[in-house]
Image 1: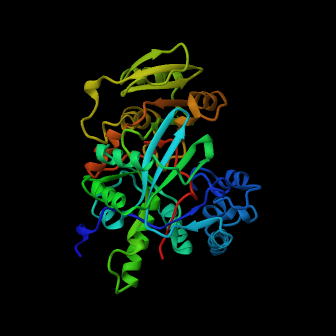
Image 2 (image 1 turned 45 degrees about the horizontal axis):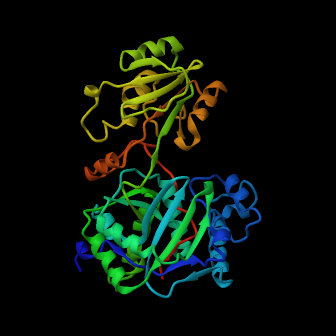
Image 3 (image 1 turned 90 degrees about the horizontal axis):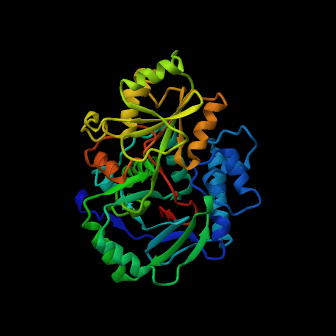
Length: 417
């Protein structure tokens, strides 16, 4: 079978909690909390999925999180939840309507498995580089568990046919409704009926592409596992479970990207006045009466020397290139690198990144405390910008997007046998 004839998406037999166990299982994604936070969140919760995704929490402080014993503990904890019936495996290959509600924001997508072949052929499109240490960790996690347990957050260009199918499926009673991290409500419906499954496969097949929004390490690791198993299994047919990776795909206009802000620890030898003067040669600078989020693309807010400033870029000065034209690129190339001397934000310890969910107060506090010397708030990157970068087969600068709400771990897993 030719690589491009494999379906873009496939139904799968999910391993999941039942309605009575979901609240005890649900966990935040493994990579948005540190070990101490994971340990605190799992305290008193023996069935928390953090005991599978972050099993080092069951070992003494200082234990190597990448040791064989830690990975093995994750597997034994998964097996325990299956034995005791906390996690069950659906009998029929299914899709799952997955809805998240955070405050007034609601987004409804489809949990599925996406084709690794499509990922390799750039029909499932990425926009970020991965870090080898994180990718290696996810490979070992998948291989040890023989499962993909953390879904990739994906997007597709909003489609009326898919919207109607999801709306129709969500008219029935959900499998469960459960509240997770940051008071996000997660709701799940199963779609196992044959005609609905076929209709969803056909509708997604008509899409040009899926876009990875959050989960590049998970998807890259799944592709590595699939490639290794193809070599090991000489009789493979190409439709084995490892040829697909767990994902939840949302319409692009329902995904919410928050700002991903910057803080720099020193002024690169400049005084605050000299830095303001240099910035004024590159941006329009206005003193602000109080903290204010940037209102549009090309606007930035800066906290320096005890007060807030608004910076704005002349639209004519914005590069046309889809990457260079991003606000994160503009700030880096016109200010942070030439004036503050941070040439590589991936490796320079002088720069830090602050998710917009923490608010402008976090930026001000960091400067007031002396931890940093200057901080910048950005207007959020849009999904249209993200998709344009992915379509051009280019890469976003580091820390360009912060997605909220985030998918939960533990509600759906994809077994590779």
